[in-house]
Image (cartoon, rainbow, N blue to C red; front, side, top):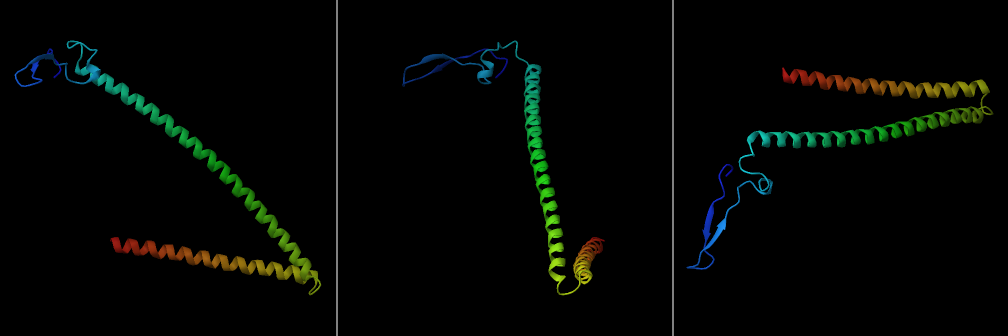
Length: 150
């Protein structure tokens, strides 16, 4: 216990024999260098606050480094996606030109251009209808969720 002086104990090693030993103050190795009168609750609270600050600073530094790593990876990933989208766009332009050139002998150049443009517009219309259908599904799900909760 803190605040008590060291007590003498008699510890028998073998039956009928006794050895005198001195018990150290309780509290472990941290108490060994501190005299009994100088250690207080305020010192313990100060040490706890210092430890908490140290832990907080270490955790903050760790989280900052994690955030910097994630931001760097995110920046690289977005850059790669942008380059990929540009390449896909250029490929579609090449496909469009090639399709017009390939269809020109069969139908005129204007006819080939019209067929390619109308084909792209038809694909775009199908995509818009699919998107509208998906959004309506979301709206129905949210409305059912509100009706079920009420």
